[in-house]
Image 1: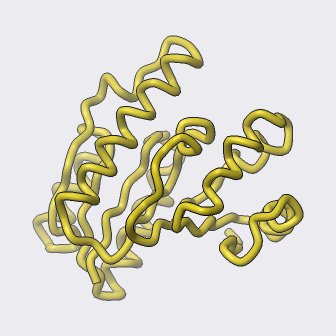
Image 2: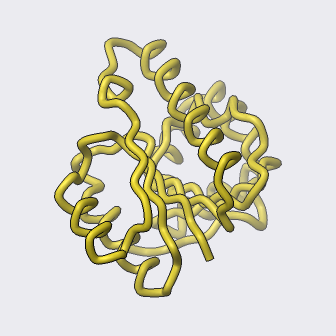
Length: 172
């Protein structure tokens, strides 16, 4: 199986988690392409390509990961999502794994044509505290997306607001 693995936010705090998931998927014999910030985890990406853990790397320009305000965050994340959808259209993948994402902009994308796993982090807290974000987020329910959470209470919350059948918990 061929996977596109992406991190649309690339926080430093996710480096170990991304490394773990890329290496775990590789050990399961998946062919992995990576799409994320150009200089994010550069040493690991170089090593993964050299030892064939990763097939190809596609960089998103670093400037799309620097923000000045909320509108800038959303605008740049929509650009990143368009880049992601372009890669999904131009290449054949069995599924896409998105290890982090911005909640609002994700709700405005078109339906994915292949299965997508979204790894929800603080996104659940955001939708609990904002009706607007919750309404936008619920648009994801019909877009061929499965949500992966870290805690059972997150999965239970998703189910309580109608995200039933496509949310899963992976405790850490």
